[in-house]
Length: 298
Image (cartoon, rainbow, N blue to C red; front, side, top):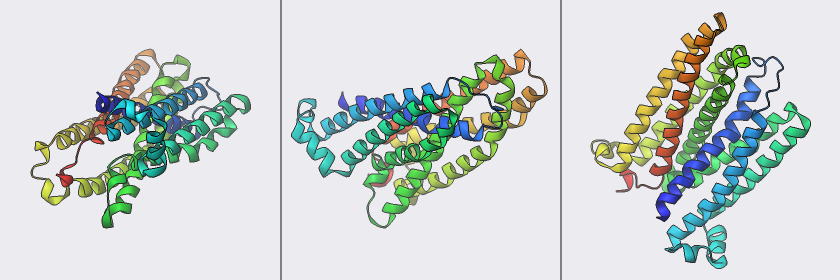
């Protein structure tokens, strides 16, 4: 039961990190679209994400230690946890992530006191949180000449994915407010350049990951492995997100800008929720894929 729990905790960490990274990014590039408005939901959302990330990371550290030690009873012993933290890069990455989550929580609390001027301060810890996932996934286990290229690709992949999915969470929250219709349309248009960069980064870093984890010899039998099947589902969900993002950018957001009526807003709410749901599915798939052997290791 420890490994299923670890998959769930990994998915929760990804989702929480998306809020910690994506919502501040949304507040920065949507400043003009929000026209000086200060919505009340972003700061509590980031605080919630930081708390969940902190707790889930500590729980995942124990669960990962249990997997390596053979039992939960052994994992909670101070000497076992101490060795995991000080003697393995995996354990150290969990501790660093927990510390960064605590820092993000403190900065989010400061936002409540000093206002929107501190959104930029969350950028560094949030990006480092995203980067830490590379060290607790397959990138951290790669050796040889591809070690650093694979780690770099994993970092880029995580940052781009979490910015996109975190932005979708912000769009869904903004769409729930009828008064935010104008700001929503402007924010979606403003996200176009950021979204393009994120998609480009995801595709290029994903190609590096596939080359390392699958390789040319693994491609023919890719779909015969559990990891390959999950990858196929992930790519299908990614294609769906791309299609919905294009629909928002070129049809629904301009339509809402032209006529901000209830039907246009309701349609946009549904499609944004669908795109966000696909993003959550991808995070769950990645959480499971991180614990499965890729074809290149078989």
